[in-house]
Length: 188
Ligand SMILES: NC(=O)c1ccc[n+]([C@@H]2O[C@H](COP(=O)([O-])OP(=O)(O)OC[C@H]3O[C@@H](n4cnc5c(N)ncnc54)[C@H](OP(=O)(O)O)[C@@H]3O)[C@@H](O)[C@H]2O)c1
Image 1 (cartoon, rainbow, N blue to C red):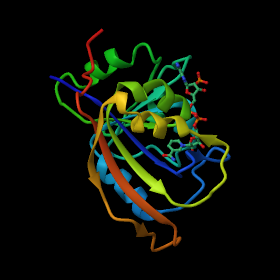
Image 2 (image 1 turned 45 degrees about the horizontal axis):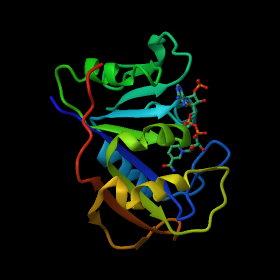
Image 3 (image 1 turned 180 degrees about the vertical axis):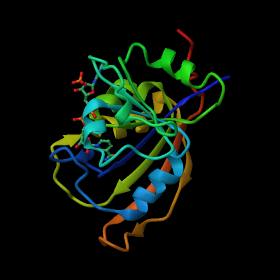
Image 4 (image 1 turned 90 degrees about the vertical axis):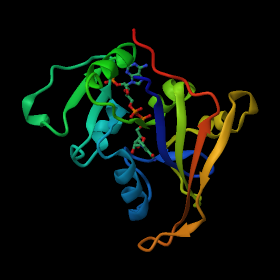
């Protein structure tokens, strides 16, 4: 069973993704999009992003990357939304164990550390560009440089039109970019 990593992010053109441990804009349409894309899948995130979530996200398997994996406490997990802690080195093995019976999409959902560690292994990039000059204390401009660099072999798959959020009046646009030659997750 061949599987790939997909990266999903909302960012400004300057690369801002976070501020004060949270996302510095409110675009309900993007939250809906994130939910639609990731539901039923495996979401891989850094420990700080996990701690920034308002709650465990329903119907998704959570993989939290940390240098000190914890024993899972039963109260933090349930059957449809389990939480696994893993080191980065053990991620591929864990993904194979989780997807042993059912193939699921695997999304790298942030934050900066995880994007930096894993962008070179992702084969699809779901990007919501937030057209606002919003300041932030976490940014990942390297990601845009990476996907635009010709030597990384990307091609556009989908480019939606620019829209304005009904709630916050922020302009945003969704893109999907893929690697011409996918990188498959290898069993360790
Ligand atoms: N706009 C978006 O789409 C988006 C998406 C996600 C997050 N965000 C924002 O991004 C910010 C959080 O991002 P962040 O970059 O500060 O933190 P992060 O990447 O979510 O988490 C960092 C943590 O991940 C673990 N980690 C990182 N590299 C590792 C490695 N090589 N091996 C093992 N563990 C590793 C470490 O956990 P330990 O310290 O436990 O070892 C580290 O402290 C928040 O503001 C959040 O709201 C935005």
